[in-house]
Image 1 (tube, helix red, strand yellow):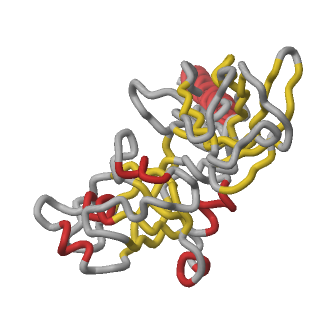
Image 2 (cartoon, rainbow, N blue to C red; image 1 turned 180 degrees about the vertical axis):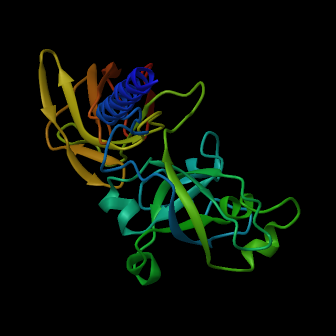
Length: 269
């Protein structure tokens, strides 16, 4: 019996050592996780924010806007689901075009369903500056967070706490477009960059003529400028402010381009 007891005790010790070793190995496994937007700077996860609304109850907030999209905010693909961002979202214009999902649950009229909005304007001063993250939503987008038939009830709250997360922009069937600024001429070229699928934000824009590339300066909002002639055909290279990826819209600006004209590319992030 003593022999069998010794054998059992020895087996138990070996099994215990094996389990400890396996447990240790499990701690060494790399984390099976990922970064949604592939950027620690802009991967905001699901976080709290404050939301207000402005403009007409069912409208796009403003058809001007500090990003420069003009009346496009009321049309597809934006379709009035837009927002003016506080300082942390607008980012001095560099946040223009970024997409977020917003939702609310604390108000009885909230549906809890996420609504995707695009930053198309700036909300300056007041709570937009003092709040860590503030969305001044269009009336349409604010109401879209409500339960059916309760949009007006939710808008009557004025200011609510929401949850938000950064998401890729999706404009099916639409490619990056360049609207040439009305003030452009033979010695000055400026363009609005819009409908940036995927990452949304742009950190650098360059104009290519022949084999040479010239960096453009960020002018304001989603508008970039070059204080030099652009004769066309010219290509435009964009660098994402999120992933750092670049795309090239080859010869998207034609010879004989016109101020005020919009030229669509065949590329997306």
